[in-house]
Figure 1 (cartoon, one colour):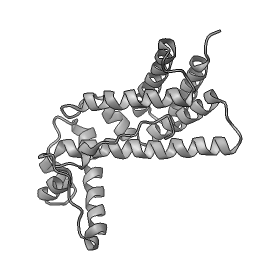
Figure 2 (cartoon, one colour; figure 1 turned 30 degrees about the vertical axis):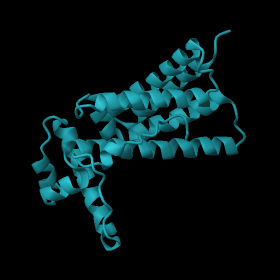
Figure 3 (spheres, rainbow, N blue to C red; figure 1 turned 90 degrees about the horizontal axis):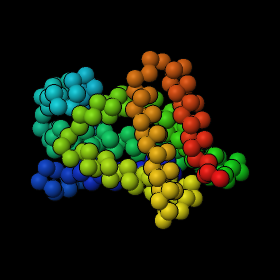
Length: 221
């Protein structure tokens, strides 16, 4: 794990509403299945960002993707499944990005925990800009029922991993609070990036936040 991003581990996005996991399709349909999923997710993100999660309609998502409504239920079980799948896809891409950055930094001989943490944070924030449509959607706080609970669970895991990356003693309350604040700064900034008007503004925010993280990461004394 990179330490900067949390692993979603969301089986919910892979479950039917009745709680049963989806069965794999025959091998010959794998490529078509992937294309269908890609079309549904792209269209769902488009509709969610335009109308918000609550007001988005499944019929519109299906119509815009030129796919039968039944395909949507078959692959994602409904609107909640689509939203969670988008979240999972976003987080997995963020994890790949930050893990690659940390590996490259370590290959260069960087071993300072704070330098690694800030490098990973920069990669995460740049990924939030690249995926700003979803970051903008998250900023609306308009998700499916129960998503806030799932997100808090993911955030707690994220804090623990960041504590390990920063080599902070999680048994000490002061250390836990410091890492929690740092993680909150990254999460809040990633949502702010969704409202940036251009890349220059986004880069200014990323640079500013990384400076703040460097300052806050340094233990007192």
